[in-house]
Image (cartoon, rainbow, N blue to C red):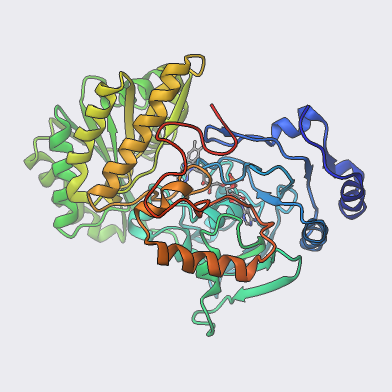
Length: 481
Ligand SMILES: Cc1cc2nc3c(=O)[nH]c(=O)nc-3n(C[C@H](O)[C@H](O)[C@H](O)COP(=O)(O)OP(=O)(O)OC[C@H]3O[C@@H](n4cnc5c(N)ncnc54)[C@H](O)[C@@H]3O)c2cc1C
């Protein structure tokens, strides 16, 4: 049996959202007990409000009864952010899925948080506009979840992550009051609360309306594939391209195991005998593209590319991207489960960290495959395992921690886009001093003194700075696979 919520709380919430949008049967709660991370914990109750006012009223009930609540978008997060680690109420935002306003002359759109990322671009593309942040999960993940995790994506190399594309929000604060922050125009004045809320992973409240910046779609786009016999050469090419001052819209790297898995899964046309491929996309005015692609081609060949090709049609281009965007699903062909990390390193340390990852895999007798945003130095090592093998699971957690430690040691950080959630909160002392963390705690408790908004996420639970509150490779609070 999973826990249950006080009947008074249940009936108050049913009174707000309607009984048909309240779920507390075991099988229903199970559906909200996981995301794309390895952490699992069941809520006491799930509700699916239909408006911002209903969200606020539910939060007021939670606050009054001191019951924790957790906002949930599509549940595609990879850091356990939407997992109700302390039980309580999951507030699912999937019914708040309307695009409320599109203002092309002023280049913004106002959306509800449950709008799926790609749907916003689809809505404005015929008018020559787009919403830039493009997580690989963009066909399903929500803009509310993107804002809360400050999501990135392949094209964030040129355009920046979600925080660069959010102008303002309506937020339900942890006591159930509603506030508006930011504005559709630039420089609204006062504190930059939009910046504060973006990336706060549901710990400062729930976004119920979001003002998104719209960008002009590029006039032309060109997608190229460079393949290498040595990972070292591919990494050197990444460095050379960025050093030359040509910033592609996207610069992605895949290693041999991923290439093979992707080919078997979707047939993207990648060379299965290559050690590494780079997927490079440039966009902009049609006239400048030839010059940029010539520079990129010669830099890739200089670094030993054995093949360099350019997609000749939109269909071919989509095929190349289908491989990259389908990589997460494709790894299931190698092992039933993966533990995905999201460390960041300075681009000049890419090769060093790739070697470190290979050594970690060998030391712990694990398969680790890599597909990542190389241009940003944002790694995505997938540690593959069989959840039925307890010893392998233990080694997976050890290896994950060692890889993140290596990223931090070489001047990088814990997350490029997936957030901290419950997965990496105890590691925050590796990158922040105790004083830094205390400042963050003070901000959080000023906004949520009762500690009801997504507790135990993002900030460490109180271990001494730089220490883990658990032994390496063991489970944090909640159940890990
Ligand atoms: C196949 C796959 C590919 C992916 N590719 C990328 C990628 O390229 N780049 C990237 O950045 N991520 C990627 N992700 C991770 C994930 O899709 C993103 O983190 C995404 O932003 C999560 O959105 P969601 O709607 O699923 O949010 P959820 O997982 O439901 O929630 C994520 C966090 O946001 C909070 N939250 C949700 N809605 C709100 C709200 N309205 N107000 C306040 N807090 C809220 C939750 O409490 C939680 O802390 C990928 C995931 C998968 C499975």
